[in-house]
Image 1: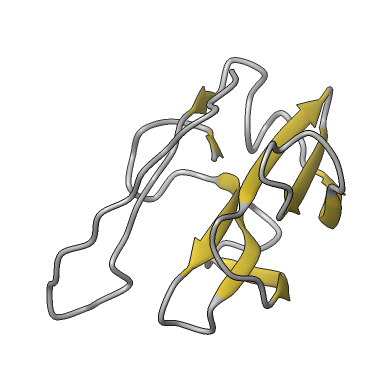
Image 2: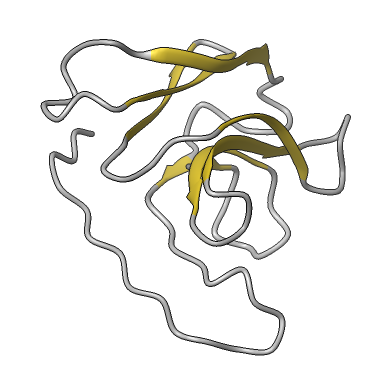
Length: 116
């Protein structure tokens, strides 16, 4: 995930795995064009899965692979331009986990092969 700030309402671009809610990967974004979270292209895949979000200038990419080594077979989910007014070059990056529950709940995630 790449965010404009750590604020809960900040603009962002990310690649996510959704277990129990459609089972698969998708990209999500929130920016001045889409002020509410937009969920884009999805793919039905099972774990383990490698996720990647990248930025070159103002071009953002969202990819995934089911390769156990995360070294090949990357599939493009989305590529788009987002202005630096929405997500500055000095953006915050990180990884997130959510239960996707509005009533609470616990979720556990394991991250490995993290490359910054």
